[in-house]
Image (cartoon, rainbow, N blue to C red):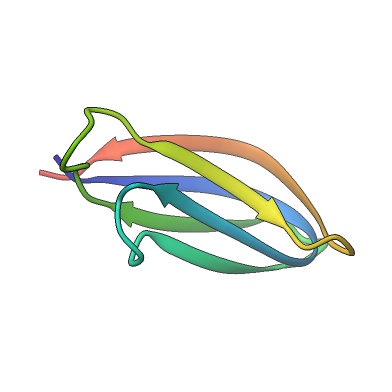
Length: 75
C-alpha cells in the first residue's frame, strides 16, 4: 500500500529525498537550512517488488543531516 516518509533534517544547500522504483512523483527537493525542519514524501506501492529503496542525496557543496526518520502506512 501507500505510505508517508517523514524525516527531520537540517543542513546547507539542497538535498533530495526520493524512492527508487516508485515513480517520478516520489521525489522531493529539500532546501536545507541550519534549523531542523520536518519534510514528508508520499510513496505508492512498487508494481514489481515488495520493497522500496529510499535515497537521500545532497549536491557536492551541500550537506544533509537527518535527525529522525519514520514511515507510516496510509489507509
